[in-house]
Image (cartoon, rainbow, N blue to C red; front, side):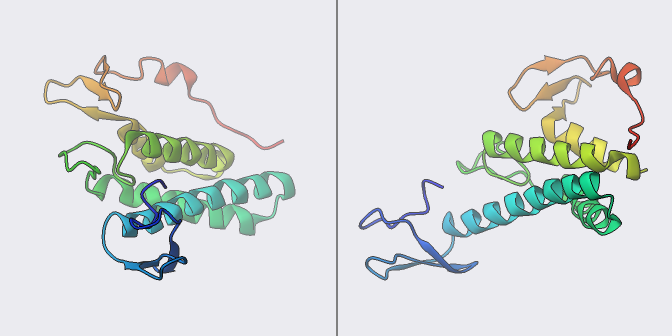
Amino acid sequence: MHCYVCEDDGTSLETVSPTKHRCPSCDRVYTGEPYDSVVIRYQHMENIDNAVDLGLAWQLSGETRYLELSRQIVLGYADRYLSYEWIDHQGKKEAGGRVFCTHLNEANWLISMAWAYDLIASEITSARIVCCLQQGLSSRRSDGSITSRAGETAQSDWPPYAEETRHSTTRQ
């Protein structure tokens, strides 16, 4: 991330611990925000990338240990996602995202989450992940309309074609 550099010489910081960040050039140590959030961001991205890799490994090998690990990550986020507070790097309320402080990072993460889900969807009976993805990509206004994170308003029955496009995924 662009903020994970030494303020004195611009050198990329090294992570000593999740709350301690050191410049390898001048040994200056940084703590707190925004540096701690960089470590958290990398962990969230690594988690969801692992879920995708494990889903692919299951699809290719059929080994259930990969499925179980991917499912654990995907459903773990589905259980927690809507409870995460909105965060924003500029301090704006209900801006940014729930996992990341910018719309772009949140959208990239949600794309990977959707991919991980798609790879194992045939083995998940819960609708909570779909709710997580829908809520992550949009927010409902008090008038019932849905606003995408980009600010466009959609019909309150969004997505309008959901029933028509539902299908069961079977492994072949």
